[in-house]
Amino acid sequence: MIIVGIDVSKNKLDVSILLSNGKETHKVFENNQNGFDKLISWMASLRIKQAHVCLESTGCYGEAIALVLHQQNHKVSIINPLRIKAYARSEGCRTKTDKVDSGVIARFCKALCPPAWNPPSLSEQKLKDLYRCRQNLLEDKNRVSNRLEKFRQDQASIKIWQDLLASIESHLEKIEVHLKELLLRDKTLNKQVELLKTIPGISDKTAIAILAELPNIESFNTAKEVAAFAGLNPYVRQSGSSVKGKGRLSKVGNAQLRKALYMPAIVAKKHNPLLVEFSKRLAKKGKPAMVIIAAGMRKLLHIIFGVLKSGRPFTYVRNDLDG
Image 1 (cartoon, rainbow, N blue to C red):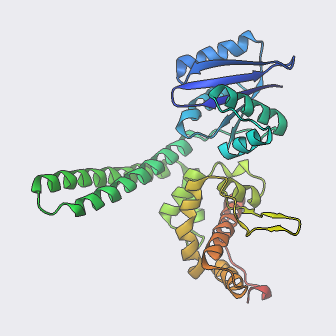
Image 2: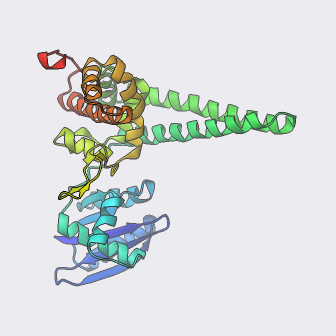
Image 3: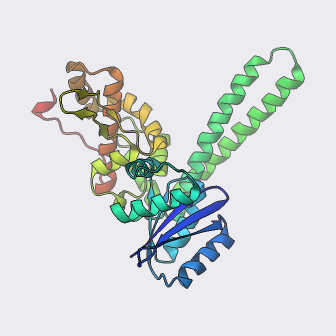
């Protein structure tokens, strides 16, 4: 299969193709529909009927071209940029340009053959957009509230910040309405939210955050794969007898999902019977508080995987090992 590597930026796409004759060809296209059409025409002129296309996860900038190429029946893989960076170092790459990066991405794809990306449904994409919009507005609300506290005398300045704060709060209310309407229309998403809420420590908002940031659960085969996607898998630094670094989270994954799990893990540590016993065992071993929370986040994500994969609500059965 022909390999295509795409370095995505806001305004352009640097595309490198590894041809069947061993040569590499490169072109630049606009990151818009006109550029997508030209890219597809270029691939057709090279008689490429099906390719494995690889690009970095760059948020909204790469989503459109990924979807277009998927609809053209190409295999599309979206990769964490840190993996591409590590691969570039393994090649001894000393130059960093968009053209070079697209070639690195193509060679990474050829060497490691990453799994195919499954695009979200329309409802899943709407949920993600609404959730991230809400998160951004909440951050804006905090910034405006902090700035408002600094103005004590000038009433005109105070009024401007108060109006801006009221506008943000109004938009947040509208988002909540849109989220409720979306869940009422989409029975699958609504069922998943209700399933997640059976897990002690997970509320409506947390359930929405998890579903917004987690791809379709059918994309994963094991709970370990989900933990790796979130960057909650352990990273161990050890070599021979001289290098024995402390274990830590890899953090090579979705930071938004880790953020969404942080507070629920703290709550679950006190109220979820499975995590209560789990946390006590770690504490008896002398593990620091933050290590226990991180382990709780990973454990909670394993439970989430089990609930969503099975389609059954959370249940806890105590056994003799839990004491």
